[in-house]
Length: 155
Ligand code: C2G
Image 1 (cartoon, rainbow, N blue to C red):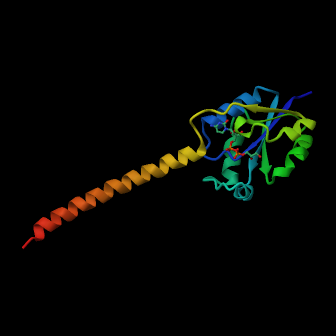
Image 2 (tube, protein in one colour):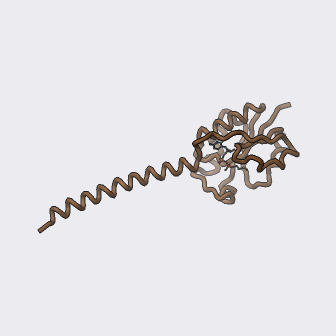
Image 3 (cartoon, rainbow, N blue to C red):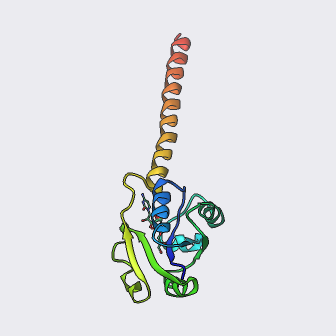
């Protein structure tokens, strides 16, 4: 009997935190199925992803630890998904510790340690700071030019 592991996530800007979790989840069983949050569901989570559902699903599906991806459209579909895919383990990163214990009625529920110091939110912040640095450089160059123009136009 194949041991199926099931998990869910947005998986935006795919990074090593995601990969390391999927690798550990796959090692818990024989197959790993992943619910990818739809764009609409992300909005209800207060998240807006950089990549669309289709792109995020394609990227995660290409991961060698993942056997199947499917859309996650609501908080309430997990029980039917566990039954549909015959999952015997539900697992998430431990930022969700305790949040899905009600699923213990249907399968094992595990929370695995997150990878420290990386998140999609941090990546977005660092990239936006990078742009801000460029704007700051341009502004100081502009002020230097203005100073030069001023000296050239002094009567
Ligand atoms: N994760 C991790 N280490 C990180 C970042 C994320 O282990 N540095 C894990 C999270 O704990 C989660 C999975 O990677 O189990 C996907 O993370 P997100 O894409 O942020 O997913 P999330 O928004 O938590 O959505 O119904 C459950 C939700 O869909 C989970």
